[in-house]
Length: 112
Image (cartoon, one colour):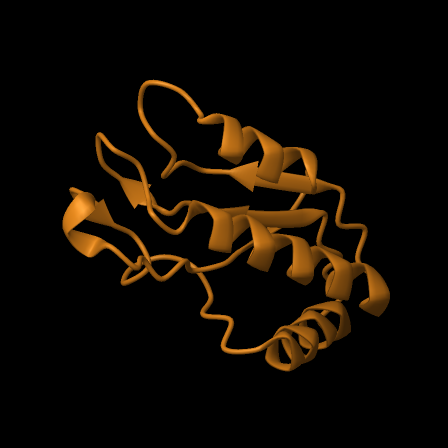
């Protein structure tokens, strides 16, 4: 079993989505320093995380925060590794356009 840390993604263009998940699911990450504290707390509980999960929200046109979500997840994974978690899995729960990923979104994913 692999345990992932779910982060909340704040949508910048809320009217674009039919369902916003940041109000219900995920851990708010106010800063990378706070993320590091949470990673240490989780490790102290004896839990070793394997990665990060996020879901921007649902809507036909996708989330306008997808790039921000990838950037935040990447930063969190780097901090998690530094603290001692494995951090090899990035689960993109959704929020990207329903039809397909744009070229810019594919480039973002290649960078992680």
